[in-house]
Image (cartoon, rainbow, N blue to C red; front, top):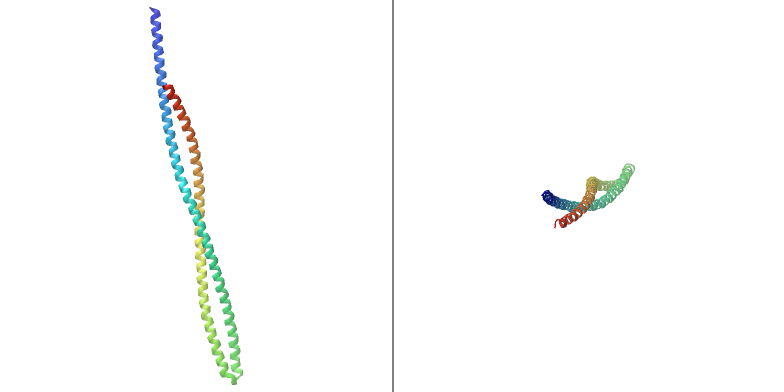
Length: 212
């Protein structure tokens, strides 16, 4: 009778342990499944983040190239402005020489009027002509001064625009650097989570086979 009781107790203990082991396996499988799902969710999140940062990086590259092209065009315009300014300045100096020469000739002519009464009529005609020349050259000189001021103002505006573009280009480069670093960070996270997902999937498959 005692022997039968012992056998019964042993059988009940074995059944209890088997049920417990089965429960532990099921819990482990469920945990691994949850880990796998969480890993996949994290992987998708980082892949989405990578797509976003890659798009932002492309836009940043476009902005950088655009600012570079605009600055090159601006530099060309500035060079043309400097060339035009130099041409007008040379013309102004030439006109100053003409004016000075005419003034000197006018002084000579006036002196001849005082000294040569006989040649008064011719001298007065010469004086009138010289005066007309002076007025004409002075009028041209005024126009040259106006053009020179216009070229100078345009050069200042181009310089200010170049400074603005340089600041934007610097910001675009900083954004590009920040996005590149963020891209590398996301790629690292994606690599890590890909490995984690593979490990979780293998573990899940192994425990699923044990369950079966």
